[in-house]
Image (cartoon, rainbow, N blue to C red; front, side, top):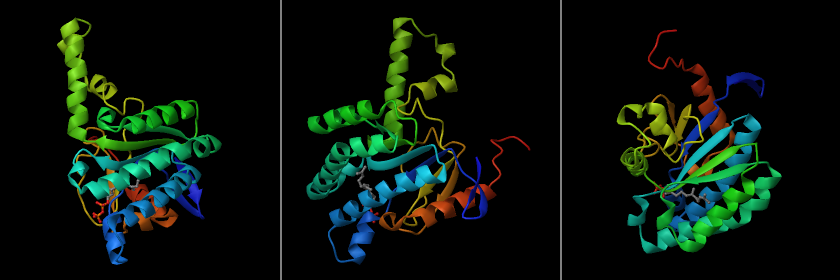
Length: 242
Ligand code: FPP
């Protein structure tokens, strides 16, 4: 959608996905423990939701915890899980005030029962909100998501409600955790790494990528605008010719 932002004509993507990387390095630069960086990352994320909404972005999807992140120290994993607890519990009233709908994607069944319960409450409490559609990936892995979708599809074939030749790309998309979301137009990854690390591999097939050296806790409205400016310059052809 074309919008004038700070006097500049920009093409604002409908859906932005973000790999929030660099919390650990941000903390290290300050001689602080890694969890200090995650706390700052959670604050940056709250601000990013507000900025996304004001900039006219409709969908924001972020990678908060991957299926591989369990390999980190118990202390770090506990710290991140406690941030989720705090976020999930505190954000119902704030989300409703901002008309923001929150969804969690990933393999939820492996999370602590109180976290699963808090996720259900937050999703339910915000389900009628029509503003920013905010999605957080927790215990998410793209290949795992595709594996889980394949099990659902195989079950339908086995039950006789679906024929193998009816398995289209659309049908696969509708069996993914992101079934209610359009594919991201733009992926942002912070902290200078340039890979997708198992985040939305199916959904990012045609997305534009923007990589920035900014560490996630330093991410702000100006970084968002940089990313949107980069996106505005791109010419998306989806394999065709314009
Ligand atoms: C990547 O930085 C960040 C994570 C694995 C955790 C992301 C979590 C948050 C932003 C905060 C919590 C989120 C919510 C929804 C409240 P890294 O630790 O890999 O950084 P490094 O590469 O510098 O070590």
